[in-house]
Amino acid sequence: MTSIRLAETPLLTYVLRRADDALVLGHRLSEWCGKAPLMEEEMALANMGLDLIGQARALYTYAGEVEAKGHDEDALAYLRDERAYRNLLLVEQPNGDFALTMVRQLLYAAFADPYWRAMMASRDATLAAIAAKAEKETAYHLRHSAEWVVRLGDGTAESHARIVRALEKLWPFTGELFETDDVEREMIAAGIAVDPAALRDTWRGTVSAVLARATLTMPEDGWMQSGGRGGRHSEHLGHLLAELQSMQRTIPGATW
Amino acid sequence: MYTQGLNQGPDAADRRIEDAALLQRFQERIDAEERIEPNDWMPEAYRRTLVRQISQHAHSEIIGMQPEGNWITRAPSLRRKAALLAKVQDECGHGLYLYAAAETLGVAREEMVEQLLAGKAKYSSIFNYPTLTWADIGAIGWLVDGAAIMNQIPLCRCSYGPYARAMIRVCKEESFHQRQGYEIMLTLCRGNGAQKEMAQDALNRWWWPCLMMFGPPDAASQHTDTSTRWKIKRFTNDELRQKFIDATVPQAHFLGLTVPDPDLRFDEATGHWAHGAIDWEEFRQVVAGNGPCNAQRMERRRRTEEDGAWVRDAARAFAEKEKSRHRAAA
Ligand SMILES: [Fe+2]
Ligand SMILES: [Fe+2]
Image (cartoon, each protein chain N blue to C red):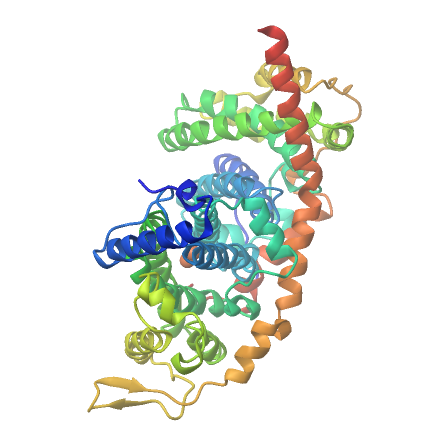
């Protein structure tokens, strides 16, 4: 099926960015199914993936209502191309080893948890309700990933080395968490969104406390990668979407 | 309560007499439909049979995650994606309860997993078939979970308490999976031509392997006699297979699908659907390791264990450090 094109308003773009974050990260976690290092961890990774896919569904459904052109959650998830996806580069990074997946989860959740908590006061009632649910879920993701980062950082020499490598690899994607642009600023001014830059200290505090417990040092901030919010992604997203969207593209217009 | 310790008298002759008495008492309890609990006396063969059956069942749940997991990243809608991920997660949970039930018989999960990885333990033959299209996910829920329910509902009354209780919980979830799978099939069958074709193709490929899930025909089955006496098994393989066919054929007809058995016909005299000959040679080959995916499934499981070893080592090392830190602080 040919891709849909949207006339993006600031609110629509804003909602799609959060929906895409949740779907792409949820999809990445779902890729772990059957491959987790412990059966108990199969359960936990699936739980987190399900939470995120649930958040994505609520956000896409709302985006469809905002757009009011009859696009449902599946049209928005399955029929937009890579360049129309608005997620953070951090969440599309491939799973790598378990250390990389847990560090990615920690870096995202340490931001998303206070973000959703602040969003519970949004003037947009739908977003405030989505935020209330997402905050509870993200608090668990933060606890779970922090526990693993501590265990792996303070585990064996090998697990420590793997965590260090994961941090180095993902750190350049953390600057994007706090970026604002015209869309964000308009939403912030309207009391619909919160300013991510205001959460930077909270995020640093959370991450540095976890890293200290994990016997790790906070990486230096160097060059930060950016572009996901504007649809300029890493090469990885295209493959993820090719897989995610394959059925809807092969047999277009069907009910599933 | 009788314990295992009673079974170790000093004199062999005394022990035989005592064993005979214990065995008689044990069979009386089974006959009275009492549940046997982990600390109760039980014959060694009863324990062995249960460990084999429960661990095979647990392995099946874990290996069974693979064919369905194959479609999580390609599920055609977000609702289906979430439902499939949750279903595969349920199967993992079933594996965990079942390993825990087997552990009450004195065998560690690690030991059972090792036997699986070493190729010494079996799992259900059905999971050695590939999932080629989305319709296979519908067919597995409808037919494979459906067949699992037929096998497992009588196990809710199994004489061994921990297994019976695990089965009650598992069966509730399996029947949810079965309805969900049927609903996927129904949606496909009410869909466009390509979808209907996909549904029929899935039924064609899964029907016979599902009939084989109940095991060899009664005439050729080894374990049925003692398992029946001990109320581990309450129906024979052929009885369960017939129940499954009788329940499933009308469902296939409702979907507008054709069951791939030209000899299938309703027998007015017996009130059952009579089926054509099952290719037991195919079953033997799959059980012997020659199914289309046996090698792939085992390789995946082994690789997962290997890839996760450093994580488990780290978790153990961290737990040790925590312990010594607590000791130092105390
Ligand atoms: Fe199951
Ligand atoms: Fe199931």
